[in-house]
Length: 178
Image (cartoon, rainbow, N blue to C red; front, side, top):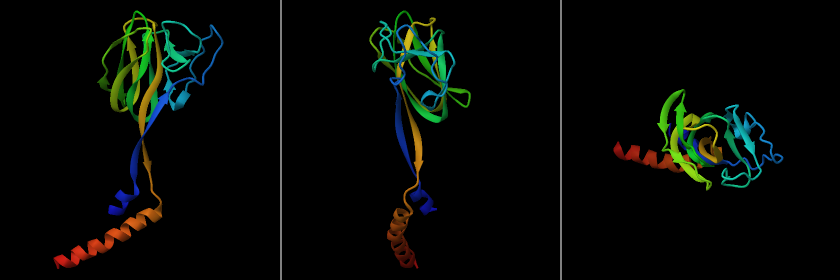
């Protein structure tokens, strides 16, 4: 049992989806690719990379939005969802986090300005996040941030080395009790 504990280690890997590799011509706003960044996106999401105040990206130049009251993103595994940057005008938005279809958290609400603001969600172990807005369209999202848990297995030589150090001590303790 001790060997199995030693052989597995979990680490968190932070990911920021900044959309900056997506570029389009002035005036275009193509649909966000369905599995962009390994995430399944609501088909209403689109992106644009040209300047358009007050929809200022937090990292140049591309950001995403919907012509709707928000949108959703579905992760292939549970993630710890940190949040994202928002900008816009005349609208307030918040996040809802779901795990297996059950609402597990709601973030604070943020009012849009032309200066990108980070909306902190801090949802632990969710597989779907929705952006919910009180008005149609007037927002942009950038730098979606989350963490995934990665299970790694150390090299067998490391596990054997650790065990070779622990076993003599365990034998000593057992004999001492007898």
